[in-house]
Length: 398
Image (cartoon, rainbow, N blue to C red; front, side, top):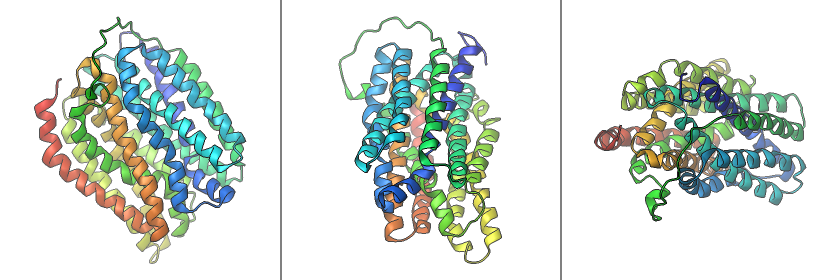
């Protein structure tokens, strides 16, 4: 990847981002077990506690974009990365549920800032002619971290490793990531004139239609990443559940071979549409596992892991396309706001998935929860094809 500052800076930020997401997602699938064992929490309470980080991230994201558009980006990025890393030490010593909730809120605030910061910095150091491809590989580090992190966390949990050591592993990984982040050089940005405060300084108004479509897709993703291990246990899958995230990572890696290049050729709408069809069928297949488990265990296990691979493919090609779509709807001085709106839309859906998935599972079961999430992908696809595609073509700036 050739850019203004050289390949080293691009590789450094890729590594920093991979370690950030790996560390963050490492404990995610084992937290439901941790909360149930240590605090006797119900599924709904677990979803509520886990969603605290999402609510906090939502509170900080709009301000993150505003700050990153107006001030030096790298210092803000590093401060957020440091705070994000520091929270892991709190997890190790957390003794009460109230303290754990406070830590989740702090983690969400830091995560909301550092992810917007990293995404904006990588856009700054890439040539616009290769932005789709560059964002594709950058997004791949997100997705690999989101896939491999839970895999390792589940393997450690199933091997009987205490929770505090899993949290310590997250602390070590993110500390290393902070070192790589500090090595990234960014281009000089002259001071800009501060514009009067307005809504579009915090939220990209043109990003609201695609944001709604992305939000609907992220609800079942939130249910899956947080509850899939519990779901697998309930329907009798005995294989290592961590492999679900491994196959997802493989799917994402394969999708990057062609996804980003298609985006650079202007095929954003086509790429997103294909990805939507893939995840739509995958989520319904995942929900169907609750039914097939009553018929054939081997078939259910094969279907279960095939779904994870398909989800990796679908989301792997959609992530860089959606990212580029939001950036293309914004002028250069609102890049941070565009990225913030993109990530905010995703986080809202993740939070709804955590809360809704836990609540529906308490009232009914996880099979119904996954069916509910899968149904939302139909509405997302219809809305995107009927409204968002035409809106984007009329309003894109590049």
